[in-house]
Length: 341
Image (tube, rainbow, N blue to C red):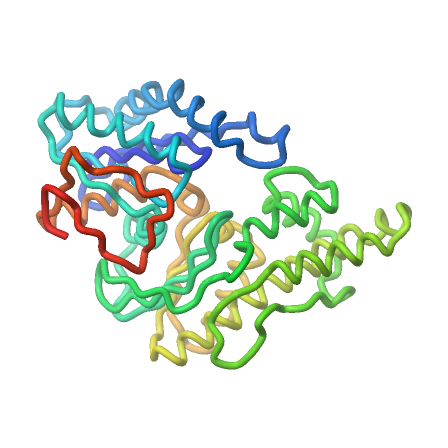
């Protein structure tokens, strides 16, 4: 029975997982950032300090247990905002010391990839994972459990970041993902053709800055009345271009790396149009698709607890000298001091 803690950005979360069953998963989203149109790091870390003790107690209560029932702890130590990560890691260390329990530092991106394993069986290996969030857009070849190799990534904006920026251009609000998706439902995705970056054969990297700029130039060419009339079509066209890029690169990577299974992960995967496109493509090409439920797509502690359970069962643990790594890569296997690498 593992308590997970997630504070990498602006969600404060704690969860309890036991034998691949999610007993609780409490997430508090920091609404203060909406007025600024993006996450303010100092405000985020202060909010974590206030909320985390209450969120942990709520997770234990929802799971109907207390601290004495726990057998281990898991916490995100990167990538993310340094101040936010420090709040979670410090709390985890304090609990591990006071309760005399092992704890393990978890890569936030690994948590996203393993989120589906808390709800269904693990995919066969090798498989391909697409991680799409506000801070990351990665294609990851998973050769075997817990062994990751990045085979494609964005060279500029992450997909979620592009959603936020285009939403701001269209005055749709923050966060941009849900706002763009809602506006797109009333639009024609074929009315405006926006470019797809790095659309070349055998290139698995992504680029969304050119797409964002194309939307900006198109909006600047319109009068206020024209913009109001085209707003939904612009949102739909932009969303289609992002999904086209993600799907095309993923199918290309599957062929290059001879994989038949796809794991989708990250907050952008909540987008229903994206989920539908991938499901249709997998049915057409006889591929198997693993998608977390919407509540496990965005940042949450259940995915961290699940990853922690797997690594703790492997005999891994972290030492109290573990530090946060804001730019932690999934491509490496950093040695966890105090235990196995």
